[in-house]
Length: 415
Image (cartoon, rainbow, N blue to C red):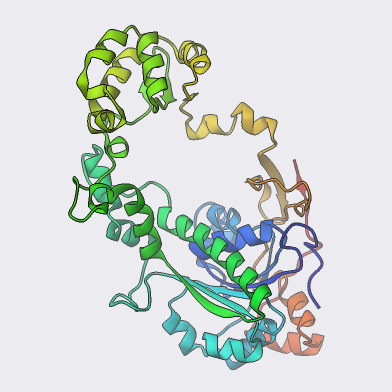
């Protein structure tokens, strides 16, 4: 029997076993849950380590955990114990996909590699999101977001774009990019299963995913053999590519096409200079000399307020927005229009803010958002669905194989 709590949305009816922690895996499985899949988050005793990170961590409700695990059900299983492994394989019999983000070697040691899981369910899609392809010398290496960013030359790119020291991107870039890719891979593998009737094992490595993303922009001249120039897309590495100071704040604009540059230069009184300078004659030349162009842009923008620039440039077809701070982003009028920020009433932490699903499905409406689960909140429910008796569940809880949280009915969300 499958849970009926999310029987709406484009992925309604799918069951996902989620053996992931921290950011990368949970970001992928939350997307599945948001679209209606029944995602069963299998946590070790003590829970996902991200539960303990940040304010609320003492209650197992750290902010990053809360923003990566809504709409899921939580079951505690000690997979190092035979009873825990047995229970996981019972759950896998009715699952459409199993997603994990430890190294494959660890899954094999647990007796939960693809061969073991596919024996109980040949149709299962078995997806691993971890550090490195298993075909190369880094196969068994540990991986974290910072390490992968460095290995994929993100700090090098920061230096080339004007940073005083090599820096990581100030977000979990590799984790979230790989999680997003893993979400697409899981959906594609499920579609392939529907067409062929067969499940399969699919790997989604962080290093290759991030390197592919980085070099998609910055392989540049080395796309050609022999190379026709150096590495790095100049527009992105240009130190002048940044929000620009106006008379009263910061503004972001992108002047990109020939028509936009012509319109901008006319608007700021630099038309003759722009048209006469051979460096700005066409797209290839402008890209080569983009820093000089952006210096002119930065100089001119100090002469008006942000709103004055918006009023002048938007009618010319030039994209322009103010540059938000974290604080002002919460009050963005467009986000207010669409109800982007919503609220949960959490069992232990009170009222929480969350973000709406960033896609809209008029023909297959999404399920209501549910708050992230307490640790083991659904252990008894999920085990009962797998055929375990109340007595057996109590015995497993007493032995520490599972943990059963005391809580009431799922709590809804308010716009």
